[in-house]
Image (cartoon, rainbow, N blue to C red; front, side, top):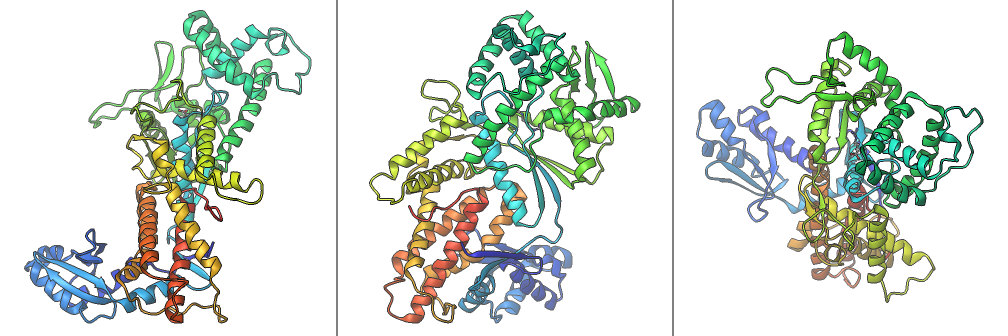
Length: 595
Ligand code: ARG
C-alpha cells in the first residue's frame, strides 16, 4: 500500500476552500466566520456551496441574494474555480477548476506518500468495546460491538487521537456462580469445592473450551428451572467475589481457557484490544467507591439490595436507581462499571470514555454516567459517550440464528462466511497452498464487516449472506475486487525513470469526478468520526470504487499510447488504490494481493 503520512499542518480540500471563501466574505466587508463551505449534495449543481449569505443578510440587514451576488463576483476569477454562480434565494454554487483539482491532488498525493491532516487537539480516549462474557460462547450479539469498535478505534487513531481499547469482559457475574455449582455437581471429586482443602490446586484446567460450551447451557438451564440451584449459584458468586480460595482457583482456570478462545475469535476477525480487563478487575476499586458514595449520602439499602439514586430534579423522565449489590451482596454490573470509571480516571486520565454497546443498554449506561458525575469521580470535562447499535437480523427479520434456529455462535458464523468465500473463489488457480484460504479469509471478513458497517449503526439490519458476499453491488468483496484490480494494473505498469508520474489536466468528466473524489477522503473520515459511524467511510469507498470502475471502462490506461496521458491515468490508478486500501483498512478490512 502507498505510504500514508499525517501531520498537523497539512490541510484538506475543504479547509483550503474554506480559506478562499472566507477571504472573499472579508473582502466584501462581511464577518468571515459566516462564510462556511459545504459539499454540494447535488453534484450536477455544484461541487461546493456557501450558504452564508442568509446569515450575512440577517446580521447586516441586507437581501441574501445581493450578498450572494457580491460573494460570487468576488470569487469568480479565483483560479480555484471554473464557475461560481449566485442562485436564488442566496446560495453561492462553485465548481472547481481542472488546474485546482490537479494541484490539490498533487499536494495530497505525491510519489512518496499520501499526505493527510491530523487533528490539532488530540484527545486521550478509552474505547470500551467487545464486551464478551467469559465462559459463555461469544455470539453474534457481541459481533457488532467488536466490528464497529475496531473501526472507530482505527479512525480515531488515524486522526491523531490516542485511543486505548479495552475489551471489558463480563467475567464476574452470575454465570460464574452457575458454572461452579454445575461443576460441583458433575465432578464433586475436584478439590475446588472442599472448603477445608489446604493443598495446591492442579496446574491443569479441569475444563476445556469444548467442556465449557456444554457446561454453561446445562448450568443455566438447571439454575433457571430450580430456584434452590439458582440460590446456590448466587451464593457461589458472592463467595467467589469475596475470595474463597477454591472458587478463585477454579475461576482462574475457566478464565484462562475462555480468554484464550476469545483471543482466537477476535484475532480471526482482525479485532484487537490494548487492554484485556474485565469486570473482576474493578473489584479492588469497589470498596473505596462505596466509601465515597456513603460519605456523599448517595446510597441506600432497598429491599436488601444496595442501590444508588441517580435521578435529578429536572429529569424529564426520572432515571431509576442504579443497582450496586444484590441481596446476597454480589457486585453487580452497575457497581463494576462505576468502579471501572474510577480506575480508568486514576490510571489513564482520559479526556473521553466511549462505550460501544448494544442500544438495549442505553438506560444502564445513562445511569452509570450520571452516577459517576454525582459521585464526583470524574471531572466535568471528561466526556462520556454511548455509541449504541441495533441488532443483526437474519433474512426472517429476527435476530440472526443458525439454520436449526439456535443462536449462532461467532465461530460458526466465521466458518460459514469463510466457506462461502471459498466456494465463490472456486475455479481460479491460486498457486501456493494456503494462498486461497488466506484470500477467502479476507473476503469473508470484508463480507461481514462491510455488511455491518455500511448500515447506520443504530439501525437493525438484515444479514443476507448471499447478497453481501456477491462480488458485485454494495458489498465488501466488490470493494476488494476493485482494489485488487487497481493493484493488478499497477503491477503491469512501469514507473518512469524519474520515479514521478507526470500529471496532466483531465480530459474527461470521469477523470474530474475521480480527482474530486480522491480529495474528499479526509472529509469522509471526519464525518465518520464525528458521528462515530463508519458508514460514511463505507459510502465513500463504494462511491470511489464505482467512479474508478467507470473511469477504467472509459479511459484506456495500459493500452494508451500517448505517454503523458498514460502516466496521468496511472497516477489516478495508483492514488485510487492507495486511498481505497486505506479506507478499507479504517473499516478493519484487509485487501488481498489478488482475487
Ligand atoms: N459484557 C456486557 C454484555 O455482554 C457488555 C459490556 C459493555 N461494557 C461496559 N463497560 N458495560 O452485555
